[in-house]
Image (cartoon, rainbow, N blue to C red; front, side, top):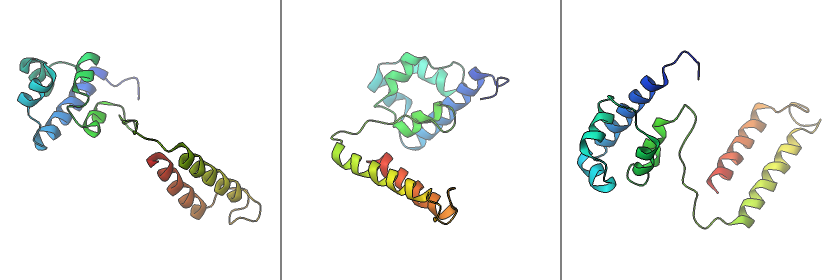
Length: 135
């Protein structure tokens, strides 16, 4: 993030966008108040962009506002994600080894781009990364 950006102003805009989307999804200030115990006046000051939400406020919203909306408060390309329950570590290991094997083969001198990654190899590897992240 460039240093000349006013972080406070950025956060206020992000809060306004997040609460606008929350309201569009039917999550009201009143519901947030009842689920978190945060006063409606405080929530409204965040909604209007008059105050920057504290970390304590953000923690109170976890589980009340969906993670994809809370992620709007973070810098670009960052996200709040929930650690999945019941990770199958053996399956995850298999997927990791599959990715590593495919990547190793892509660097073989006889591969389409030689030792560099070709576009078709990048596409395959990208799909494997997505599968890893979903596992």
